[in-house]
Amino acid sequence: MRVLVTSDYRTLSEEAAELIARAVRTRPGLTLGLPTGNTPLGMYQELVRKHLHEGLDFSRVRAFNLDEYLGLARDHPQSYHSYMRARLFDQVNLQRENTDIPDGTPGIDADAECDRYENAIRDAGGIDLLIVGIGANGHIAFNEPGSSFDSRTRVVLLAPGTIADARKYFAREGEVPRSAITIGIRTILDARRILLLASGRKKAEAVERTLRDPVSESLPASALQLHPDVIAILDEAARGH
Ligand code: GLP
Image (tube, rainbow, N blue to C red):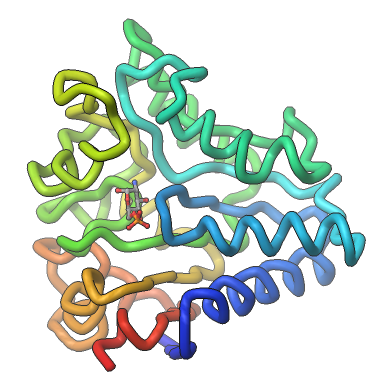
């Protein structure tokens, strides 16, 4: 894993966006794997700026999101569908038919949706560049500790700490989803290149363990050590400085 430590969150966001922009310019029809959460917000802002002011062209880019809550309508303000529309899709020239996010609509046949999603990624030729954040417990996408490294897109129960972290985004306790659809660890490792982003002191322990601990299913992010082309961009706080 190559590690780049930036002085602050803004620089982390700029470096991440520049890496993506270079990949898109080199291969305009590439397939991205896209994360949600707070960490990539600055990166998306910078990608939008590059689109508006530097002509960065997404017209041939394909994009698959990593995960989605199960049991939220697509237009729920906290759904990852809503997040992606607001942060990226409505602000750049990505073609809507070139974007895909697992569908967590209440009542959906979730297992069938997982199969559809995994097949859609495969049919697109796989993910060229996958960007991923990290949970404080070392989860990647919604692969919680204990996830098999052979896992593919599936329904998962969220860990208590992950539910607690999500609580602030929902008006009522009862509204916070308890489960999600996530691409698997194997789906992540199948990507040709992976960009790991981590910002802030709350991530420092998970980052340290991801870089140093033996590879173990009890720490999902440690699977990234098994991939030949991972770049981790960390700000100093996440690196523990
Ligand atoms: C959620 C998402 C993950 C994300 C994580 C960290 O669990 N499913 O993909 O990496 O949150 O989020 P944040 O960047 O807000 O700390």
